[in-house]
Length: 354
Ligand SMILES: Cc1cc2nc3c(=O)[nH]c(=O)nc-3n(C[C@H](O)[C@H](O)[C@H](O)COP(=O)(O)OP(=O)(O)OC[C@H]3O[C@@H](n4cnc5c(N)ncnc54)[C@H](O)[C@@H]3O)c2cc1C
Image (tube, rainbow, N blue to C red):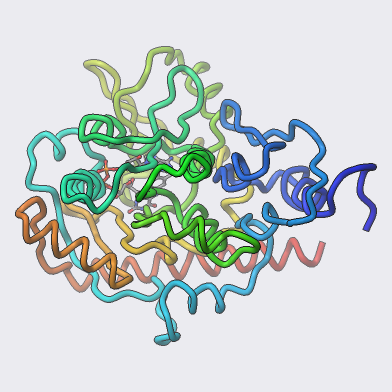
């Protein structure tokens, strides 16, 4: 393997196998871990050659192939049989009982409610979330109070590199943290826990991993150009992709609502997302998505014991309400997850075969 002079094989692999191939998903896992990667306006950029031989960036990058079975074992214990949505203890419908959270959240506000109450119960000191981007791409932000957490609610449909902020918080010894992220980010976090030489020690500070369902994320700069071409210049208040069969991308501005064909947006999907097999954030403690057909509710997949403890405590406090998820919804979720996996497996095979 030939590297540029003075460059470690690890960094060289990440650059040649991921960044140069255009399949980086901008999860941010390598940024802040290695000082020679940086995140700027929706892109991971290499600032200098790294000569460390630790290979930490390669160990945690979700676009570098990995033994997933060992990761399942690490996060979920003994394998419990294959399910299209990964291992779980329960799947339930839920929403926040707080009117302010419900009004500002993407759907039922379960993510925001869990974070706010984890903070109030002293289970975490702060949470690493995704901000709304101030003229630039959204990015990670450390939130230490209710107001900051609520300010981050809602979905940005582009990647945010938020694991950078988690790395920074871990480097600074910021205490017990929660992290909210996409399936790629949950995988990177699980891989961090398994990584040498200090991953386990770093991961111990992450008290909760809250994963978001995700079919794909858009390339930030392409989306910005697209919206500019459509004459959108202000800061959108809210984005949404309503469930099928709507096939639209919704943008809410001050006093107006715009809709764009989803087919046009799909052109901007990050290449790396097409290789991702995970729709429901299988390495999270709790994964959250929409509840199709029931506005203002979430589908919640509780996967780990610590996830269950958190969910039950917040439910017990009256900050969440829950109800059974309709059987048809669960079946549809499993089909959608399975389809994403099959599409990605095919895309990965095509790539392997050149
Ligand atoms: C790119 C993307 C694709 C998605 N695709 C699907 C899908 O196909 N099906 C589905 O059911 N749900 C999908 N979701 C999840 C959905 O939009 C909601 O985030 C989820 O249902 C939680 O709802 P909530 O009301 O509890 O969220 P809220 O309480 O509003 O909390 C949302 C949280 O998401 C975080 N967040 C926002 N944008 C990002 C981002 N880009 N990266 C990381 N974290 C972010 C915020 O920090 C906030 O804490 C997607 C989300 C994103 C960001």
